[in-house]
Figure 1 (tube, rainbow, N blue to C red):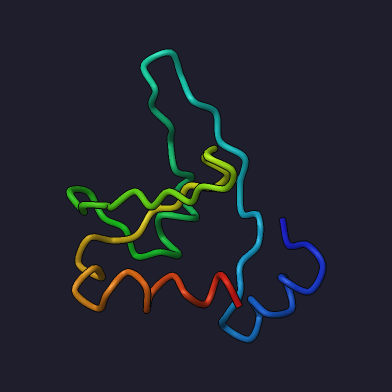
Figure 2 (tube, helix red, strand yellow):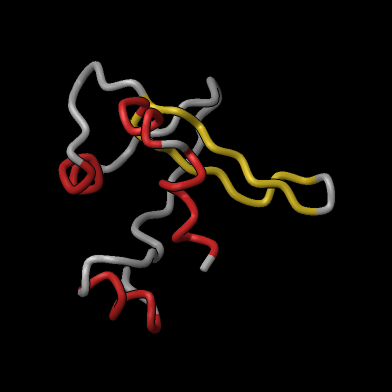
Length: 83
């Protein structure tokens, strides 16, 4: 589901957009759609770090990053989302 300019940015290889809407089950689990896992290069056994953004003492956004990318520094990896 590409929206607005984010879709155009994504076609250039950068930017973000809404890719899917997920449901949390009664055990707190979610399923990442196959096309997203494939696009992100995620495989069985990959470790993911959960990134949380807060505003006004409330969580407003959550994100996942492959743990192997943490060596590059979280700030460097996620900073493009704040530009």
